[in-house]
Each structure stands twice: as C-alpha cells, then as structure tokens.
Image 1 (tube, rainbow, N blue to C red):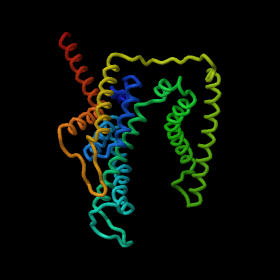
Image 2 (cartoon, rainbow, N blue to C red; image 1 turned 60 degrees about the vertical axis):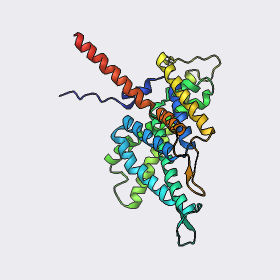
Image 3 (cartoon, rainbow, N blue to C red; image 1 turned 180 degrees about the horizontal axis):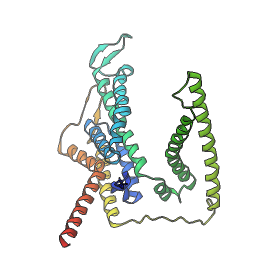
Length: 311
C-alpha cells in the first residue's frame, strides 16, 4: 500500500503563523481596526483583496467554497437591501412603491458597507487560524487569566464540537436515526436526540476540563506558565515595519488624507501623492503575511539550490 504524501496544514504552509504572537496580534488589530474605520473605496478594495488573498492562501479550496456559498450571497443581499432602508442622498434614481426615494448615494453606500463587511468576515476567518489558543493564553494569560482561558476554550470548543457532531451523526445514521430519513416528526425526533447527546457531551467535557485545570493549579498564586515563544530579530523587524505603517496611516486618517463621504453626495479625496502614500502603507499592512511568505519561500529556494549545488 502506497503512502500518501503529507499535505501541509494552513499553519505549516504559512510562515507568518510562525512569527511571535505579538506580531500577529498587532497585525489583526490593524487590519480589523482600519478595515472597519476606513470607508474610502480604494481602502475598501485593498482590505477585501488582501483578506481574500490571505484566506485563499490559508484555506485554499475551502475559502473558495466559503466565498461562493455564503459570503457572496450575503454581500449581494447587503448591497441590494441597503438602499431599501436608507433613503439619504441628493441624487434620486426612482421612487419605491412605499413612496420613499431610491438614491444613488444609498446604493453606493450599500456596496461600500457590503465590501467592508466581507473584508471583516474574511479577516476574522484568518484570525481564527493564525491566533491559536496557546498564543492567546501566552499574550493575555498573566494579564487577564480567566478571560484568556475562557476565550481560548471557546476557540478550541468550536472545532471539537463540530468533529463530535460529525461522529454522533454518523453513528445515529448507522442506526437509522438520521435527520434526513423518515417522516417530518421522525426527523425532528432524531434531531432532538442528536442535540441531547451533544449537550450531554459538552457538559461532561466542561466538567472534565474544570477538573483538569484545578489539578494543574490554575488560579493559584505564583503559578508560572511555560511558553516556547521568543521575540527574535525577524519579529522585531516585522513589529517595527507594522508599527511605522500603522502610525503613518493613523496620522493620515486624522489629517483627512483618506476622507470620503457618501451623504448627501458622493465625494472625497481621490488623488494626490499623500493619499497614494497612505494607500500604499495600508496595502503594505494588509499584504504583510503574503510578503513574508513570499520572502521565506525565496530564502528557502536559495538555500535548497545552494545545498544541491554543493552536493
């Protein structure tokens, strides 16, 4: 029987996930913060493009299915229904049957809001992969130990719950108690039975986790924590570059370098060297994981070619 080739997981392929947790935390604070504050069309496009590219790099085909099945319909509905409830703006395109105006500004704002929402959702999916529970405990364990433990347990509980649900569903299907078989009442009864099993499992798992944490001395004074993370030179360089770009972009936001309005008319800062430099800084922040991954790939290929030439 042939051995199947090992397929690297998302964090194994991603060099950015190997950086210090502080770098990842500051990065996601920047992309999520600026992604929700900046409403300039160019910044929205940069945020959505970078988030989609990084999601594709981490998840591959799963990201495509997520975007096509769930994200794209949600964004289309958000952009379509926005003008139906928001009637601000000075350019009236038509009147709805209710008598409210349909304005160009509300339609443009609906597209912008949908783009912002899509970028935030994609960034959160990347955050869920890169920021593991051990990184969160390392960053916040000594500051807010109880909250960091709850947060890390929540992130860990979701994939475990999904895996256990698949196991229970497969077992019930083998017994002929699947939610897809039988009449409507039988399927409802099967679904309630599966839900009852999952709730029981979750409660038992919570009790076992509490006993395990108590046995390990959680909450005792003077308890230390072990971590493998060390701030290296590459982490310091990444933090410096990220901080400089973020500070420059923040100053640009405060000085109106990326000002843009949607009401009462669409307008704002479109061109200029200053605006272009701010967008370049934002692009550098959003594309940082991809840039670091490409740089590590180049270094690896140079090292591999050097080794092959020596042998």
